[in-house]
Length: 251
Length: 251
Image 1 (cartoon, chains in turn red, brown):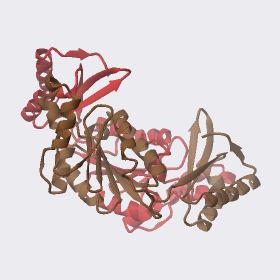
Image 2: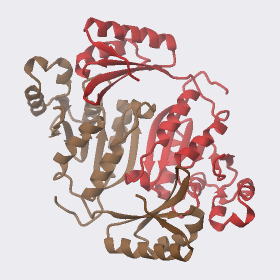
Image 3: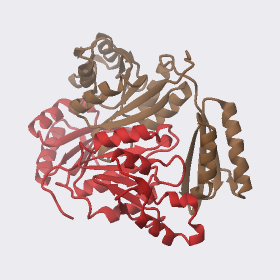
Image 4: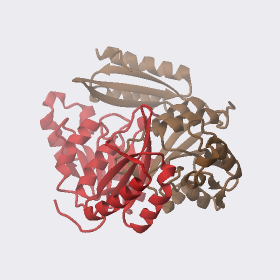
């Protein structure tokens, strides 16, 4: 994997009425963010939009100029509500039609008698897009410039990411450390703010948790510099100790 | 609950680095969409943005003019990374400062010795905002015009929705019916498309599932007219039967 010594960011576009309606719980964001974190790419915005061509075109065209990478999920299957390929073609002013390589790939994957009209639709892509191979179920994803289009089914999406590892040029990897403590946020708010002011390029997050009657706070320190994370963590642990707050084993 | 006999829509803004980084799985969208569906409000866009004032202000100001209701989640706690209240004040050009009613409410909730500086921050809100009461943990949410600001912790957010039921003026309620069948999408794609063309104002979604070795497709029919859903469902069941596809008991 090539490395750029700078920040590299991404936006995710989740396409699907089923996510907006609450029918389906999205988990692709978490899969993508963990994968991209490992490659040194930071997700800085996510938009969830309906199966609506105007919404998709607008969103893609707005975001693709502002982020290094765009990943879309959903809408590349064989049914009428799968309109991602057509919408991406329109967003880039490209022809939408039979993609020879995708067609061959699907023809080989299905026995010829099973390569139905419905499945042939999955070989219709924006002209000149390059393919993202699908080891789970044949139908490929595709790439147009910096826009990477993946399916909505999490297990299939997940199986396709490995093939992209050497296509993504990430930046500095972001590391994190979590300190879990038995207290409420208000007890540490001002000390934590002081620490954040001192470590301007480090992202310090504070997240209360309430689980099985237990309460606590997770403090998360994120930075591309491991030694800064250590230094910052030690400073936080110092004021925690001074306040008599217990550190919890928990991840 | 008042009812408007028209479409009423909403956008959700999920505020939090922890969602973008993959540390935390959002489940508030699903809680909000199920609640809003019941009130006749359709979520048409979701944006997930970082704890960054410029991003929040821009997103709020873009969306609030385009949707009937905006709901934000996250960032209203006591720590330095909780910047939603300040950002909303800026988005609306309102003063950000001590909100008397919120201050009183928090003063009563905590014993006065526990009403610490950190907690006092949660009484700083955009001027003239009205409060969303919090039966779980005291700290209120707030409303400015059509923007409703809720906390990020799902159990707390959920407990606050009941108090909003009579503030939201919904439109026609959207009903849905799901037909689960044992097949693959490509087998039904063209018949389903024909049905969709016939029922233009009905939303027909097709969602493949793969679970424990079983495959199938969920067809979801959504409309504000129950009789249209029934008619459309019957037509779909007809072509399913004709194709010899098995209908599954599954929800």
